[in-house]
Amino acid sequence: MSWLVTGAAGYIGSHVVRALRAAGLETVSFDDLSSGFRSFVPDGEPFVEGTVLDHDLLVRTMREHHVDGVMHIAGFKYAGVSVQRPLHTYEQNVTGMVTLLRAMADADVRNIVFSSSAAVFGTPDVDLVVEETPKAPESPYGESKLIGEWLLRDMEAAAGFRTTSLRYFNVVGSGEPSLYDASPHNLFPLVFDALLAGRTPRINGDDYPTPDGTCVRDYIHVADLAAAHAVAAQRLAAGDTIERAYNLGSGDGVSVREIMDAMARCTGIAFEPEIAPRRPGDPARIVATGTLAARDLGWAMRHTLDEMVTSAWEARRAA
Image 1: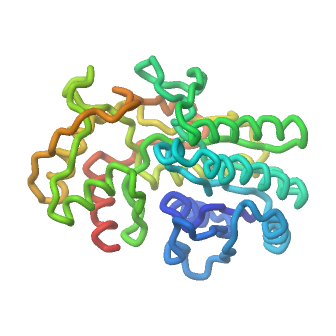
Image 2: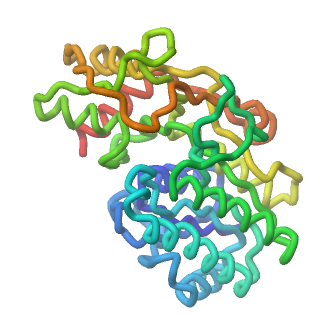
Image 3: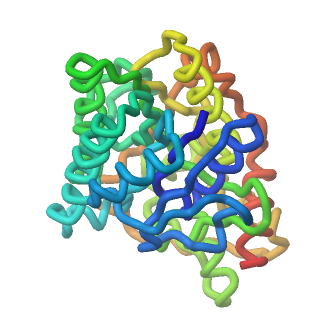
């Protein structure tokens, strides 16, 4: 069975390609290289450069490579920027999803695993988010991911698609030194860039109602996330019944202050972070349970916080 991986040259997509291949599944990498890197695609991997807005290219790629399923990871993922660029966000994430689903139907491909997000929940008023927690996205990005989940639900009913959505929380770390997070907005690369430039990393707000006053988030290792994708693909291919959506969370949060302490410990660079004002809209705590994913997808937190930081730091320094 061959899987088309959209966004395969990105940080997460490149790890997913490797996890699928390690599980014995054939893959075809698809990416427009707007934020991904051609060097992230494994040697010998079939690669198609293109956008998910190109219906004809998608159909042709699926037919030529005998694709049976799609891992849809491509998208515009910057929640904060999406507020300033809502039309671009919806074009990439909603129009792109519609185009992909139409191409899948035309190529008679019915299995899809969707890269969703914790952003569908907005600012939850519970300590531990579960799959049924009410959805209240607070950005065009979060809204676009929720619409993507709705589209999959509708295609299940209308065209017999078999789908699941994996909701990512804070993805960090590296599965191998050649793959790193290059996002200009994520905490880990922001801290690493500051340290490498001789600047002091910054904490936005230390007066939240949390144990140490800083925001608490749910950090998961990218290799653990990728492994769950491989199991999801295998279960869809086997015709197994699985849930429409899974939260990939740890069940236990880590504060920004704890992240900074781990950064100093693992990089060997001692620093005391600067304290800046809160950022508007930052919730005090977002942590999710991964119980359903553990039951169905072999989901587990296989890496400690220090292992997450060390692997990410080594990959960033090797970039």
